[in-house]
Structures are given as structure tokens and as C-alpha cells.
Image 1 (cartoon, rainbow, N blue to C red):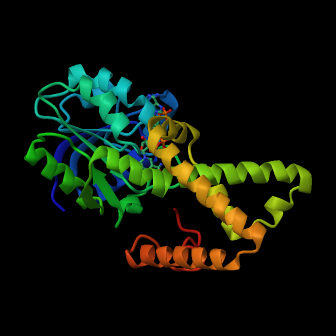
Image 2 (image 1 turned 135 degrees about the horizontal axis):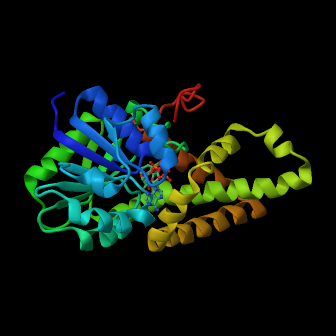
Image 3 (image 1 turned 60 degrees about the vertical axis):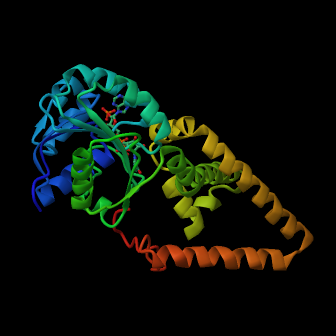
Length: 306
Ligand code: NAP
């Protein structure tokens, strides 16, 4: 694949950034990739594993002469990073991000962007419960969506190039209005994570009662919850704090449905349970047909990442 950018700067070197590096390398999408992270530990690890072409100590240094800057830090840190890099951005640069929520990131980053920079918020819908510079792999974005949420008049050339980069990484692109993005993700990702965290917390309380039986006999359903609940605490704290309204709206609806199911169990209303589970089974089939998961019995994991 052809080179899209001469120099790309990645701020933050976790799962998403390191996967981008591997993908860009594999596909030859960038002339040079410069990276930086907050802690010396992470920068040292990145140097040790040869993650980027160059690892520098500060974000200001990283963005110097970059054609594309991607903010790959937790959502709550985006504003401070944007403020730090703003004076050092070159004319004509594209600044993007990979944050899991979009309205809060736009509000935090936009005020710091100089006239000569184009800000295009984006969110690759791909991840694992792993984090840090060693966790990345090129295939993470293959056949996954990358949602772009630019607002107002955005330079068409800049938009086209960023699209090309994500397509080169294997993603499918869709444009979305930021608030709509946040609502959709509250349903598909944020609320399910909170439910997984809660279920694992409840089981942990129970474990004290049943002497580790919960873990010993943990069935696939619960193991999936524990996998999700092992996700990075900083990232997920920031996701909920920055997508408050949409998450609360979905959790409100979830609680109502849960009460209805609880009532059906109490009153022995098998028809209600059967109809409900029939409907949800059809949703699962739709996801498989859309190519967003596999119907292998173990979710196709079989020791592979993700
Ligand atoms: P990660 O593996 O936890 O790495 C986060 C990186 O951000 C680290 O390099 C960390 O530096 C740096 N960082 C943390 N706090 C910071 C702060 N206050 N100031 C500056 N840098 C800071 O994270 P990730 O999973 O790649 O996630 C990065 C972004 O992608 C987040 O916004 C997340 O919402 C989004 N995202 C994640 C997923 C997913 O499933 N993981 C999927 C899609 C989008 P140190 O290592 O030096 O602490």
C-alpha cells in the first residue's frame, strides 16, 4: 500500500497506538512514526521493543514537523495533551484522536487547536482488555469500523487522507454526528462494560461466601464478563465520566428491562422469557451475518488475541 503521511506522531503508546504502529509498518502507510508516552517506563519499553522509528520524551517534541498527530491517551487526558502540543503543530497538520467518547473529546481538544490545524475526531471500534506498548498487533483493526465525527467545514483533502490511513489499517469508515456516536457506543460498549464490572463485583462478593466455587466452576458466560472487567481502569473511568448522559439513559432502560425479566421469573411467565430470548438470539445472528463476530462456540478465541 502507498505511503499516506510522511511523518506521524503518536501521543500515548498503549494498545491502540502500538497496534497502529504495527499496522502502519506492515502496510507502509507512514514514512516515519514518532511516539511518546507520559512515563519514562513506557518510553523505555517502547524503545526496547523498537515500537516506533523514534521515541521522544515530550509530546511537544513528538509533534514537531508531523503531518498527522494522533492522540492515543485516555479521554480525560486529551484536553491537557492538546494544550501542550498546540504551539508546536506545523502548518497544515491533521490532528486526530482515538478516544472512546467523542463529544467530550471535541469539547476538550477543539479550543486548543490553532487555525492552521485540522482536527478530525475518530474512534476505531476495536480493542482487547490488554493495555500498554507491548499489547498491540497489526490485525486489531481488520474489518472493524472506524467512526469519524468531524463537525463543520473540514478540509476535504485532510479527511480523505485520514480515511486512507484507517482503510490501510484494515478498517471500514463511517461518519457520524458526535452525540449520536456517544449514544450508540453507550448501548454497544459502555453499558455492557459496566454490567460486566458489576457482575464480576457481585461474584467476588459471593466468592467469600462459597469459598472460591465461583472461580473454580466459572462457566463461559462469567469468564467473558471477567475478561471484559479486566479492561484498563483509567480508560473506563474516563469513558463513563465523559459519556455520562448517554450511559445513564441506557442504564435506566436496562434497569427497567431487568425488572421486567425479574418479574417474569417471579411470576413464572415463561412466554415472556422465551419471547425475549428468541428476540436476542436473532440479534446475535445479525451480528455474525454482518461479519462483526464469529459463530465458533468459544467465540473463535481459541488462544488467539482479542
Ligand atoms: P492504554 O493501553 O492504557 O495506553 C494509554 C496511553 O496513554 C499510555 O501510553 C499512557 O502513558 C498514556 N496516558 C495515560 N494517562 C495519561 C495522561 N494523563 N497524560 C498523558 N498520557 C497519558 O490505552 P489504549 O487502550 O491504547 O487507549 C487509548 C485511547 O484509545 C483511549 O482514549 C481509549 O478510550 C481509546 N480506545 C481504547 C480501546 C480499547 O479497547 N482499549 C478501543 C478503542 C478506543 P503511560 O503508559 O506512560 O502511563
